[in-house]
Image 1 (tube, rainbow, N blue to C red):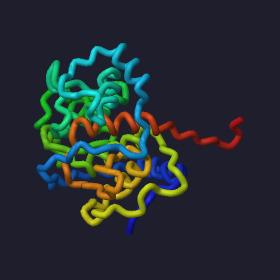
Image 2 (cartoon, rainbow, N blue to C red):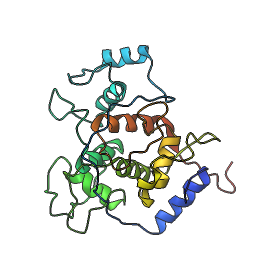
Image 3 (cartoon, helix red, strand yellow):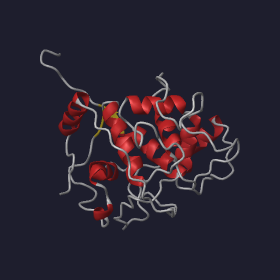
Length: 255
């Protein structure tokens, strides 16, 4: 049965449940090796030309493989300027390359302010690597778990359903909410049967919020098992930052 979160109260309830117990599961890595075409983003906010011009003037943007013609250009500039995402080299961003598990947890960790964390508990996560603290932080806070107690899978690609579920878990961890329109943008994905049960809530919420990207105006496919690519993640992070906001709960007696 399709599950939907329709109100802030539902998300608050989930936060309470998560505080009571941590649900640890590993992701199923049966993703397709094909990468999606660069999608357009109908119906979502795009930076104005004036804003892009200001970003260009205030940011030394070094990546020659990302340009204004790319739908994710504004998002990559934003992510780079805010030190959330770096390139795969000093001059290359690799926007169509697969996003790995190590990369994604590092992006979220930087977005959270690079908080301290303990030592990573996985044998495939060496100490003092660029992702070591991020992996430990994500695991400690039940945002991303390893495949088991010993293996994290740092270099494995992240599928779209994994990426949006991880972002959804971060939203719960950070006590954020997203206000949705009364009418959902989509009632059912054409490929819903391909979505894992644990990813349904995340996929529908992120699509309704304008954070998940379609391949075209009439596209109603989630493409859950397709690998997420770096430009797509930059776009998701930008719109997540744009649309999410802290949950505010008025307690009895508050003025």
